[in-house]
Length: 388
Ligand code: GLA
Image (cartoon, rainbow, N blue to C red; front, top):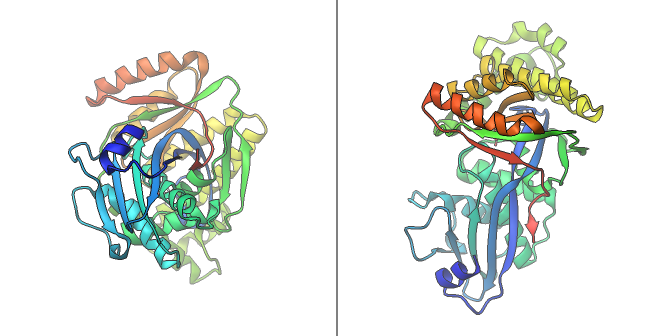
């Protein structure tokens, strides 16, 4: 990276600093963050690295070793000119630009130029939060180089704001929070309505976390995601006419049952049923993990997938196939799609001794059934983003 940095930015004068941001896998608690519920993700050991340096001329220069191989010069812009999302073929720059825009709106001053070289091994569009990783990473770079005083929780909030208001994806806080606040060997149980969080030791005994990337391009994710949020919002409004609540996940399963007659549209009701049940599953699963009860944890993961398939309707045929193959495989404790959905990855808890066979057999059957090649990652958990 140092060689590329020197070549691309023609900058030998500045001393570079290295930063890293992990991706995340959500173990359970899917599509509950935007409804004020609990999520249970962990930061993973795949992620995005960056080399960055400040320099006197007040422009921002960006280059990605993953996306920019056809260019031999960086993308360059004056900080004063960052106002809105750019419609260009180097569209990835909108993530760092979103961060600049949000930091400016919070009064942070860019008094020197910055060069940033990114390089990652996090598969793009796989539901492992590559966008949150680049956002939080960029916040950490600016705060590290320009001495902005931004703690981990605020880094997550500012990154989410960049994604919501600049990029236009109305995501919740989970991804940015996990990327910023993750802790090695722990998952984070986060209450998304208060941002209270607990680190739960990720004690999986002789099991491993195995991710299977369906490699389905998930182009619908932005619009369909925003539509799901809207449907939850509709259900909430309907229930609020009869009951004083501020978010769907305030309801217990029994209460939702009692007030289900208020929800006018059956589709909106299905979305609400998922959110409320999934919130309960996230709490029960984190409790099961605490008690060393992996079997219950696994069953709740399976149930989460079924609910995302039948009630929230964000799985695709390919992730359904991956989950089902895993459920029928001896040595799998539990398996479900993870992240926003519409493609992406499944996460499975697999007995160590069975991992090689799992990858081989499920990879082969998936190819036979879909014609697609799945990629597998055996992942550990990692610390949140920061300077290395
Ligand atoms: C995406 C969003 C998150 C969360 C998940 C679903 O990853 O960015 O905020 O809503 O989907 O749980």
